[in-house]
Image (tube, rainbow, N blue to C red):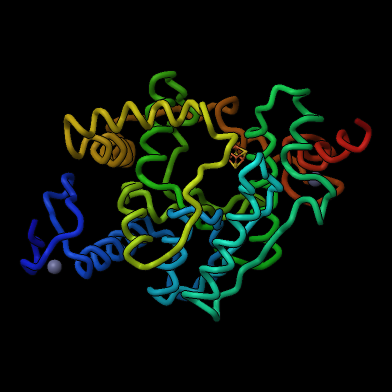
Length: 316
Ligand code: Q46
Ligand code: ZN
Ligand code: ZN
């Protein structure tokens, strides 16, 4: 297999782009895909300070690496969720983030928020008090992560929070929302969510990159990342939709890319329209009040869901 650009040995076949690339050309290609997405969706500008949410996985570390190589001012935020589940998930993922900084970008700043150290409990304990043994901590975890990321971005004066969501993630969410005709979510699913009333701007610079491209990028750049998914993600419906889309992609290369990117284009041009109902947009409701404990925006009239979560746990 020869590189389509220089004829040397290719290391990856990108069916969806009709390209086979050698190591050097693939690294250039991936980097410029990210840069083009940043520019195309006007995500941020060279002078902006960015906070990258890093999990120790391939996507977020690849994203942070690309941003630093492109000379953006990008600091990392790692949230230690206290998830062990017999595989030391959180401790390993934190170690990956720290190793990434030490080995690849010694000058980069990594902020760490440790739930147990700061709040006394990790996600597994919190989920037990919340959901009484149902062992489905993801909704609690999502709430906690959103709150902490938002606070860190606002307190640190960052222009945006960048996350490592890739094209596979976005296509799976789109598929799920389309199957259920969730118009509110379809109206809002986007590579950029603007800052509004206390909610920091959120951007997803990897939306045009396939998951396997991030894995290849990390491997070729020598970035060590955690291979295990979070143990609580087993059986998640998004994984099921990802598998379906991977089957589709095998039979019809570029299907995932077309599905997602054409959706964005059709909505942008007004060819398709979705009404954002208040019920489908959690954050639209959130703008009404400020939490009396933490000062973050909330839908509740006094204390936000995050602060109530820890209060409930204390009395449990
Ligand atoms: S970290 Fe948290 Fe995810 Fe684990 S508990 Fe669920 S939400 S699966 S991205
Ligand atoms: Zn080449
Ligand atoms: Zn609060």
